[in-house]
Length: 88
Image (cartoon, rainbow, N blue to C red):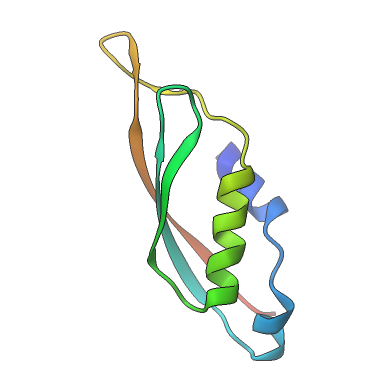
């Protein structure tokens, strides 16, 4: 939930997408490594390059997460989330 709030506050709708009336859902996949950082950020299904870049930039600047754990040890975890862009 905190990550979703971070994304909502961080991503700004790209002006080019607003001007061209582009909306949709960008599906992004990434790995939260054992140290809580991000790697292998990949757009699984994009909408428009401007929206895709906005998502990539927000993930790259995101604060660290608490790493996943397996048997008491930190492990990398693959995450996949949709980020919806809607024009009002």
